[in-house]
Image (cartoon, rainbow over all chains, first blue to last red; front, top):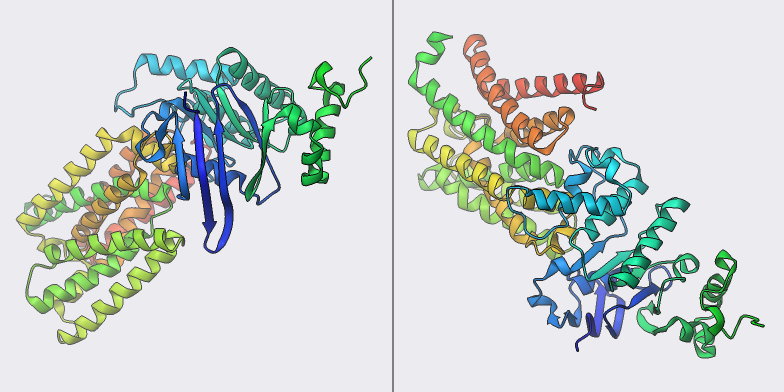
Length: 263
Length: 269
């Protein structure tokens, strides 16, 4: 069975500076992957290359189909790092923004489409903003509306680029709980860039560490327990492991963790 | 007023002016929101090259300019994409090239003559029947395009990257928008003149954006302001014996100030 994402020998460079070098991996259905790495390490670029937003060298397959021939975009939900419009006068309601996430752009809006829009807004607790102008909302509220846009087509794969940076503590918890449920209950595959390894570590099943090359790709347990990884990644790995152990006062790995002192 | 409307050339000017002004305003809404509004300014400079070629070859300046401006506008997009520079820099490069070639050809054609001055400052009363039909076809194409692809156009304006991940061919949408704008710009130079074309593309949408709460309102108001400015500007030109192109743009600026004051009064939510 083909992977949800198959990347083979990806290379990408902005002018002469290489950003990605020979990156290959396969994301399987149901994976919840935390994409981590230093600033400028190529995480966002990798997501853009996977989605065809940047043209790199190498091969990308989505749901078994080469990227150039891929048409089932409704299977993918994408949330970018930055809110799309700095244009303060873009007169569009939050519900219209969410509507953009549905497949097809027929001139007439159907009743079922609106139902799906409101259901997605309910999920991200933005239903009360439906009629408000998008740019009148706070950055955090906008981010939740954009998450609803990513979810409205009920995607099988969610690609999220540091989605929680603008959110307050309560919204962040809601956000990661929702992603966790989508992953465990609906089987949604998630690829998420994050620096928030502690909070999101509870849900993540695999880590992918990118710093131009694919430095590490494996399960959370392998990441935390591998001496090799700790040596290779230095302080960052230690920081991430510490985060995973300390956040919320409990170890996300439970009894299987060899680092914790279990009685 | 009745005397003003009794002249057939005035009637034709009003009809052609209204059609092209509405088309420019509708296209302008998308260009302004995509931060491409200055493309109209760049294209107007390239128009000068088209007019100069037409004067040299004794052909119709409108029909000669359309392919030249269309190809140049595609060049603007290609340069921006190829060299990964911002659109305004690409517009600057191509418009400077168009203007310098235009001036060179104008000198070869014997310098500035009355025909050329008419194109620079507008000569709405010389619009021909064929050009009026062309304006009607343009407006129909623009309205048809906006109605048919409304959601797709709004999504592309709002967030090109996300639109791409919905399967929208963003480059094709942008190319269509720019090509239609090329035709609108060329048809506008008789209405307001090469110097003021970009105002028809920028000012009505900006006025409408100041007072609208929905995207559809912006489209209706921008087209409305633009048509009203053509009628009021032409009437003012007739009564006060002033250049019609300048009068049309000044009415547009009046609308902009009015919208700003309305907005400042807290009327837009």
